[in-house]
Image 1: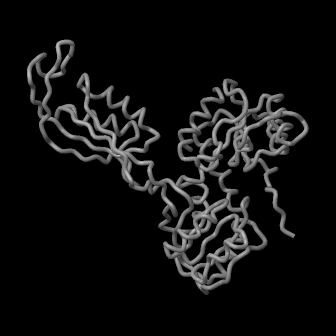
Image 2: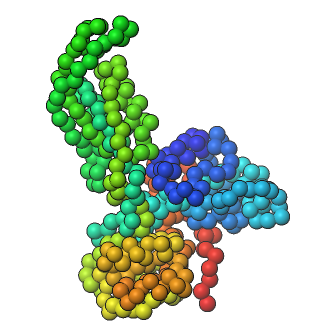
Image 3: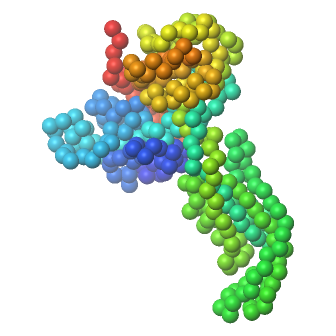
Length: 364
């Protein structure tokens, strides 16, 4: 099996289209045409992680954070970035990262943190807008179901926890086939009316090319008519952070102590503890200071995130508890997501989470 097959699978599970515009997720370094020997997983690409992969005989390193963001102008041993690139290439290692695309998935970094903390009824804190579109097409009644199924298989028709969603309406279509046409029904040069079904499905913009091709393949007409409509609807399955509920209202200090235990951190920096008890919890793995307002507007009692600056805490305004729980600590379970995704699909090579991965921050 080639490394590229694993990369293709990961791209399907963690769509690159979900990443932020400034991010650099995906396949970053190496020759993906090699046979896969093994996978090692970490949060950050470090010299220790590379050494661990070499020791284990693995040739694919998967991390949450990409280590290449800006343009690389020099690859020399003069800096750590250059040394790592050289070592990767010398040892024929490949590097793949799934960063904000994994952050932005409902079951991603924030989603798994919700599970670890025992939250229920969880939703995306800030759903993405501008990602959804609608396809409208028209086809003869007898072929409508086959066209619907083709659109579903291409990935259209998903609304929250429901799939195979569509809307249909009966009507009549008219056309006149030209001299060079090969009409499915009707005759060349003659006006024709055909009973048709109008089919509407929503879809994510990222699958549009595949969706159109599946439509053309399944549709009986030589020139099927279809409309592509941009929507303002939010995609409730994709976006930043998460918000949910504790099963029972809990003493604030008790909850914060539970957080410390689960993410293995000795202390938490908070704003004023303006609530003695908490139930509605918002969170964002990594740097989530930009969603403090979302957490407040949705009535969260407390908002947990990895990084907060001094003046970020000022935004609490006695309405919400803000808690900084560490960047590495809040994202550490991303490794578990990647590991489970790979190991459940592939059984012909070893996959492991590196024990060298400890983050850059120490608490004294």
